[in-house]
Amino acid sequence: MSVSTIATIMLLVIFLALVFLRVPIVYAIGIASLVDFLYLGISPMQMALKFVSGLNSYTLLAVPFFITMGELMGDGGVTDRLIEFSKALVGWVRGGAAMVNVVASFFFGGISGSSSADCASLGPIEIKMMEDQGYDRDFSTCLTMASSVEGILVPPSQNMVIYTLAAAGVTTVSIGQLFVAGYVPGAVLSIVLMIYSYYYAKKNDIPVTGKFSWKALGATFVRAIWGLLAVLIVVVGVVAGVFTTTESAAVAVVWSIIVGLFIYRGFRLRDIPQIFNRVTMTLGKVLILIGVSGSFTYLLTYLKIPELMTKALFSVTTNKIMILILLNLLMLLLGCLIEMACLILMLTPVILPIWMQLGLSPIHLGVVMVLNLGIGLLTPPVGSTLFIGSAISGIKIERLAKKMIPFYIVMSVALVILTYFPNSFMWMPNLFY
Image 1 (tube, helix red, strand yellow):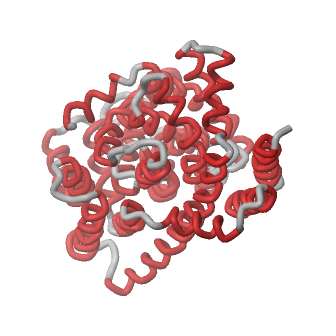
Image 2 (cartoon, one colour):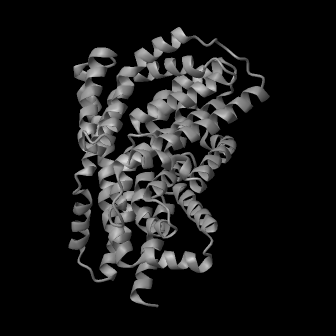
Image 3 (cartoon, rainbow, N blue to C red):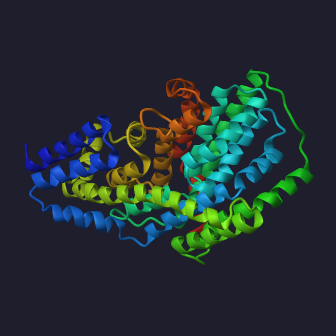
């Protein structure tokens, strides 16, 4: 075997072995990369340079701002207002409490940009609300976890920003286009979950509660609009060209502080250092992952792994449908094993060339990849949202994973729609751009 082949096998085997041994993902990437650098005779200094260059990006500045905005809004009292508005919007139909869960996650996801934050913030309130209306705890928790994935599709999503960074070595991807493209996929996921909620409520004869009221809808919307304006600042500002992504995120942080301090009064000035401390902890994990993934991605390119994988796939089949199935299965499988941000950084340089060779848009891949890996957040053994759902509900992870099976199927329906019918959502970025 050639040196490149041995190095490729070593890189992947060492990385996967360390992952299965439960070594933290950052160390697994770093150790596998360092061993390969030494084997190939490349100076370890080159690895350090790739670590730093991976962080040397103006676009990356948007990530800490988005994380800060989500934390400020979560503590600022937005949660209760969004649930009240969602109740007025859909709480009066059959399966209303479950649909409130889904709609609230759609709105809150646009603020937090995180599945874990959505589940942790809204989960305790939503699960209790659903239990009070006759739903069992298993279903309530599973729906809360499934709907939280909307948060990583609906803009502004830091995972979308990370995807643009990962794609930069292959092609230029507009973060504005990605943001605009995320709304319809988030809505598609919401709709399939709401249909399943209606079916579940009817099957289990869960009664309809509440009545529709225009007055209540208007009043709750007015109370919720101040929080939702943060999302409008980001999306409208970027799409209209008023701000760059980073500038709009910074403005949204200032607005979040104003809303939290003076309008909703969810926190006080003395609470802000504690909020920033949480942001720093989260950001530290993200930045380290991006840094070590830079060296890993360099090795993938150096060893020509994307080209090898492209040839291998097209040697098996040239059927576009089959290739898309194989790529989705690959993302779903790895999403069950590896942390999301890390996988985006690792998989994008490999899959994007294949995707574009099929004549498909990088924006399309961004949406499909985020949903695939979002499903991975709900699966053992490393699904962070699954762990949070277990913690807030008191249900064992093994039991939750079994109860999630119908939701995996429902979410796969949304995945099929978005994979094979890209025009269902690509019309929005095409319209604005």
